[in-house]
Length: 176
Image 1 (cartoon, rainbow, N blue to C red):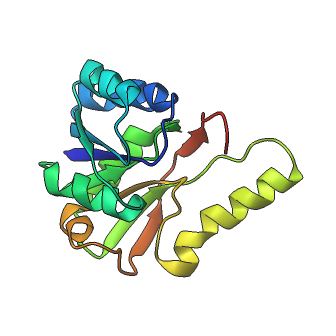
Image 2 (image 1 turned 90 degrees about the vertical axis):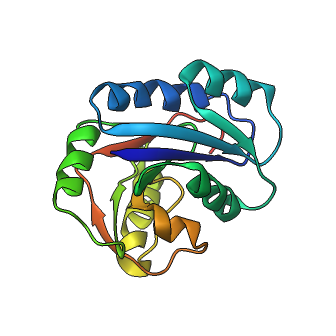
């Protein structure tokens, strides 16, 4: 089972879309718990997290500090980190379950590739984003990434062996 960490750096109404998709993962027994870590107090986030049965925490700092704080609170050995408003689609739960069944090591991670919006430049941007993990060993914030919770608790991500899952992340935020 996986825990979910949602590092929220801005008051993003599309958090509701992300939480709604996660319900399926809980029902399938793939996702265990969820924590929303916000960079600022947000009544919207508190209401959404409470309605979805998630823990809500406020932590100052950049995205990495929010993820580290969330990792300290979750209960699973592996965590799925999602940017609020960016939602997985397709057979993402099957991809997660299959990857986890292979018993990856702590130096391995999986990511759900970003889905391009329409247009040439959007496709080029998606190409760059989706190849970043292969080049750098680190995911892009628009990816959903599964990584060992112990690695997240340690702070800055080391270079990881990244595997692309057979699913897509769709950006539902108003402003990109």
